[in-house]
Amino acid sequence: MTINVLYTINGKYKNLMLASCISMLINNSDKAFNIHIIVSDFTKFDYDFCENVLKDYKNVTWKFYQLESFDIRKYGIPDWRESQIANARLFFQEYIDLSGIDKLLYLDADTMLNDDINKLYSIDISEYEYASSLDYMGSFFIHENYCNAGVLNASLDISLKRRLEKNGLSQYFNSGVLLFDIQKWVSEDLEKQIADFCFLHDISRFRLPDQDVLNYGLTEYITKLPFRYNINPYAFLGKTTKFYFKEGKRVMAYKDITSDIENPIIYHLYGFSKVKPWTVTKTNPL
Image (cartoon, rainbow, N blue to C red; front, side, top):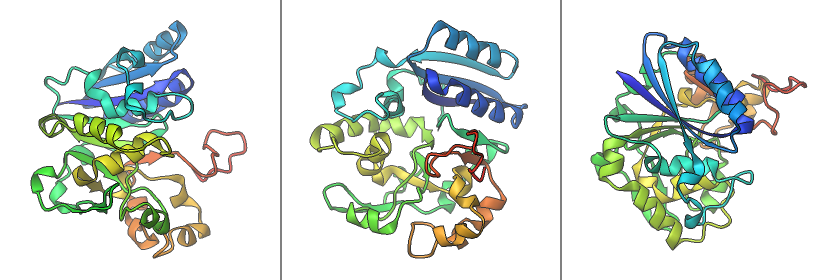
């Protein structure tokens, strides 16, 4: 089996993306990977640098795609850090030839894989909860149609419950690790549903554009993955962790994450007051 993985990056994030790739390849040396990289603001040096690193690994092929080859701006999705590159994950089928691809794993550049990726690919989605939430217009959704299960798989974000309630959601998912069932995604024409949602709603004030679009626009298609597939630095704050994940405060309580912290699969190094693990201060718990 060849595993297909997607990253979307600009030149500033190439080193982080390569570190993520290496963590995946060394923990899965018995598997073959196709890595799809949608890029923006890449120089010849950036392309050469990536290729010089990846060529040392025999179990991987890779391909670059230009962000500008498809017009994402026509959907009116706000930029993230002055770029549309983060929103490219929503329209991956405009870039990648999906023939022969069963599943596609999207990873943010600041992820690190700690274990065998088969544990994610072989998940029995029937073991996990379906998402239930209020949609953007206030109608209540509950997964009653099993055929929707597993189309898009993601872990819960660490949002405050009161913030979700204010915005009409009961659950909210993090878009840094996404597992797509390609056949279901295409047959349900979910890219068109994303486009329709963007055209029909005022999304100009979305704070986390791609993540908000997925949560509001495709809520009934998201199946919850365990926290171990998208563990953030807040889970490692020592004594502060129990307070941070206080029951009733966030969508996850401390008791809900303890087992996952002990069995991590993917770390996601976002947040923590914008202090990253590689910064000189070394205040980040990872």
